[in-house]
Length: 396
Image: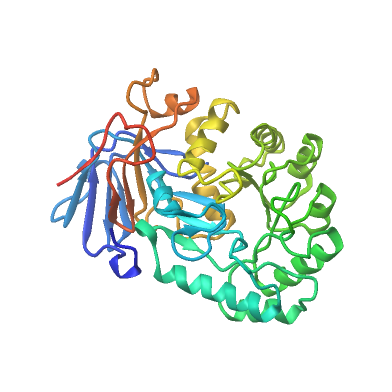
């Protein structure tokens, strides 16, 4: 299986036909009235009914065989280091297995698990740029890892963040994983970054590992980061009343993660819905973490919010696709013209009591994945991490 960018995006015309259900990733219209997609050179060119599209002269044709299709899932919060290895769990292949769980794009919240991670300005900048450049050239199973998320320290002046922006860094790592953690210091950094054009994310809850810090609701409200990272804890949650306050008053996106407090995730969903902020809710995993790495972590969060949170399943998928793409300015996450041809073919698992995919997710069953396509290239067949899907596509 190719692991470098030379393998993609695809060249030529890809046709996907006989789609049973097409999920768009867009909360405004989560289900599309379409059964076919045409992609050219790895990007979506047309979506609609097969009878209305030009499906001839395809270089590759995928027959979905009635399988539903979702945009590639986005993990809004992960902690890569180098390669497809995590020193946190001393495990190989966790990103490739994430692709088997439907994740096609991963966003780093900081390369903090690197043994001996530097904390001086020169070392932090060097690590961020190295991580970013490495993952531009290394794509396990085709996954797109947006890495290079430097962690702010108290002795960094504004010029450090200006240099990072000039070097091509797009966002900083979790505020709270370094010595910058509490409200006033965090506000100084978020203000600089907002003026410079760097996205900010902020740890929320108790310390995740030795050396990280407790960040409470008042710290978050003073700093007002672009993303309230793991509002349900990573893994230890703030009080539920405080989660509700953040859902009302924090201006940034509200992220819930698999490696957090699941009850708190449901509280956050309820509070976000009450505040009319479902479009601000994002899903991540916060893996690798002390509780391990979960290839199906994003799928499990979608299923949790739909089954126990009562969110319509087609909307739950949007929290891990279009919501993340829009709030974090990513070229991913939507099945729409011009977007990358990142598709997950998935269905209810075999022998589920549900009648279809959406009902299965609403009942709490983890979907089965039959194929993953990234940038128009088939990257997996039947998943190695999910139960077998009731339907699966074929390539003709």
